[in-house]
Image (cartoon, rainbow, N blue to C red; front, side, top):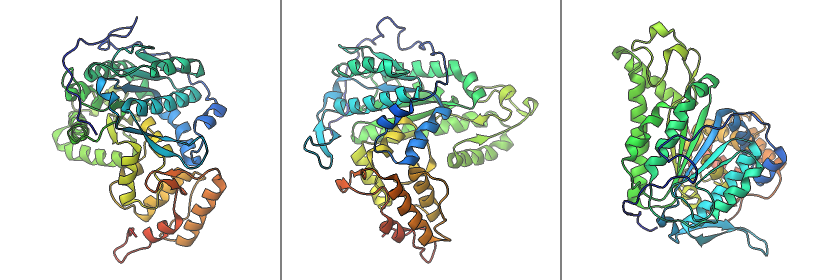
Length: 425
């Protein structure tokens, strides 16, 4: 991959006939319009049943989505890739393309999903494009033409990422009381190949740690300095979040707060309840004690993703029985949040975690527990894959169509070792 850009200090762009990026855009009126299920089935063609369900369930989790899209000059670098199915048929193949073309493929997918789900989704480019608009909000199929026109533009200029992050943070802060009252979040996906040219991104993102937002960073480069920067930013966001939460409690309660944070990382949403008088510091920036009774504790968190091929290789090292196909990558870009996604590229899964992942992918309710009923578990996994039908997913590692779950490899991985847990075959 090419090195990150080092663009100079060009003046910050503004949206055509819209506020400057540093000002929060007016939030769209929210309405829970029913999704277009036929359009959703078309957009999610090839997705296993469990991931289709997860995308539908995201409507209740996320009030709206923001995509901040880097269209700076370095996105023209020709080291991207995308999956293309030959006109003559056969398995898809990775073909070379620019980073921008790779991102356009992603944008068009998520725009179709947003239109089908009827979830307001903001696509915000860093720079004013030569064709189309810098900011497009997709609420339904009538908005698809606008995003397609914007996608026909070419990348240019610098990376004013801080300004756009600040604008989105302001917009989320505007909606924070309503979001917390409803127990909902906003999903922010940042798509970039470099570092900001307009300030300190740590400073710009700090307010997000106190807001009901789930952040996904989709990197378009494997440049080590860029990857390390975003990884350290993830750790900084967690630290800011922990410090802010501790401010709401007396010093002797701080150890308890750390336990709560660890619990929340496992269960996704944690419910707390207390009287306003019990909060030692009174109303504050993280949780307003006057409205915290019974409300979910939802605060900034982040997931950093590589491109599909790189992510699939990392997953295969630890979870070789899983086909990390494009649908899994797409649902993570959209913000579908499950702790199991954090584990599949970090370590071998326990039998219980393997079961949870199988249920997440294949849907259909409970599966037998592999530690108690290994054979029935494996048979049920094979049966659900057969019931799902359709074309098997393309495996980015083996470069061929394979089942979502290789049952024979799963059997070996879930065979109990002397010390318990999974064994990587």
